[in-house]
Length: 75
Image 1 (tube, rainbow, N blue to C red):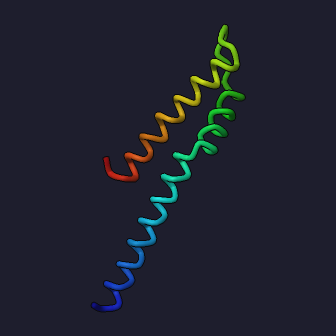
Image 2 (cartoon, rainbow, N blue to C red):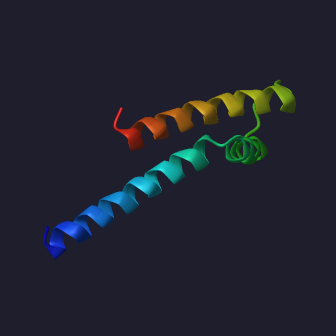
């Protein structure tokens, strides 16, 4: 194995580790709840309670997190 191959292998390994950590973070309940709360604070849906809005935005964030995971994993 030459130096270039070794460096490429190390870089690919680090990229895979980064992707796994990014997916783990985006899929975490803490991140999703915080993001949904921030969206809810910025967007008001008329005639819908804040609690119902929060549930709606949490579901939206969960959906987006699944899409992001699919993008990172090539699905």
